[in-house]
Image 1 (cartoon, rainbow, N blue to C red):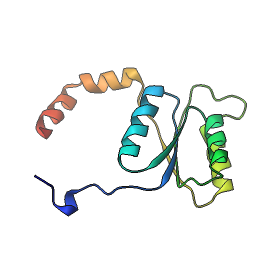
Image 2: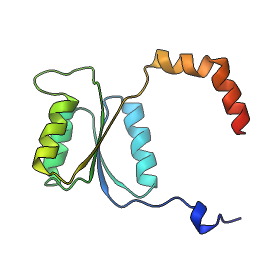
Image 3: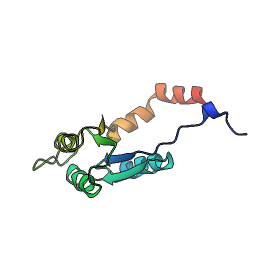
Image 4: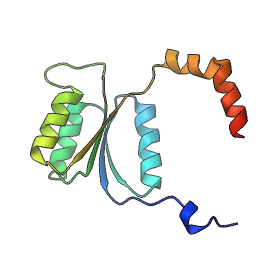
Length: 122
């Protein structure tokens, strides 16, 4: 059965610069975004992101970056990347987010309240 038009997800077409140090998370996000129609430039750290940004001559619609990255040395931080990208192209939007640590994620998944909510959603 085909869902009614209003229930279908809108498809994207914009270019997203995705900065994520965790390879698994980066790849998962890239696949989800590409499946939704977005062009994704995946970068493993802020320095890599700035290189990717230059490769496409700044044609990035959205910068999605982790708030904290493990190796924030020599000016290589999400904030310096954000400043560099946004000062080069003011029309680029910004989304900063963080992913829980493995310990936090395991704690959430093990919690009774989370399991109860998951059952209710079935």
